Image 1 (cartoon, one colour):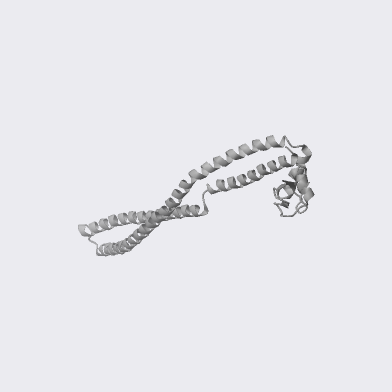
Image 2 (spheres, helix red, strand yellow):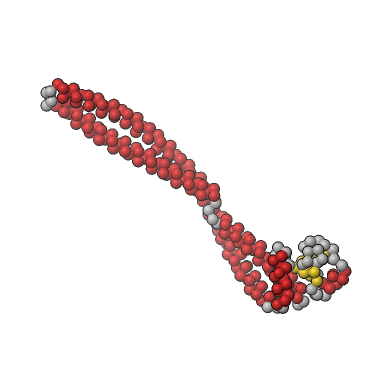
Length: 231
C-alpha cells in the first residue's frame, strides 16, 4: 500500500481514537455524582442535623421538666406536711413553689415550641430524602448503561491501539514523523481526502496534476492547508 494511503488509514485510526477518548472522559464524568445530587445530599444532611438539634433541645427541656416537677412535688409535700411551723419559712416555701410554677409554665411553652420545630425538621428531612432518592434512582438506572459503554469504549481503544502499532510498522520513519508533525499543527488531522479536485479539510481546489499524483498514491499536499492529500 502507498505511504499516503497508509497514512490516511492511520489518520482514520487516530481520529477515531481521539473521539473515543473524548467520549470515554464524558462517560467517566457522567458516572460521578452531579452537583445537583450533591446539593440534594447536603440538604438531607442539613435537615438531619437540624432535626437532631431540636430533638436534643426537646430532650433537655423534658429532663428539666421532670426535675422541676419532682422539686415542686417535694416542696408541696413539705408545705402541706405540717412539719414547718415558722411563718417566714412557710412564706418562703410558698414563694418558691410559685416561682417554680412560673418556670414550669415557661418550660411547657418551650417544650411545645421545640415540638413544632422537631415536626418541621422531620418534614424537611422527609422531603429532602424523597428528592435525593429520586435523583439516586435515576443515576443508578443510568449507571448500568454508562458502565457498559465505558467497557465498550475501553475495549475499542485497546483494539485501535493494537491496529495503530501494526500500521505504524508499515510506514517509513520520515513519513511517520512528517505525519505526526502535521497532526500536531493541524488540530489532529494530517491527512485529508480529495473529492474530485477539492480538499475535504479546507475545501481548497487543487490542480489536475495533484489529483493525478494522489490517484497514483504519491505524497502530495494541499496548497491551502498543507495537509497530505489522498484520493
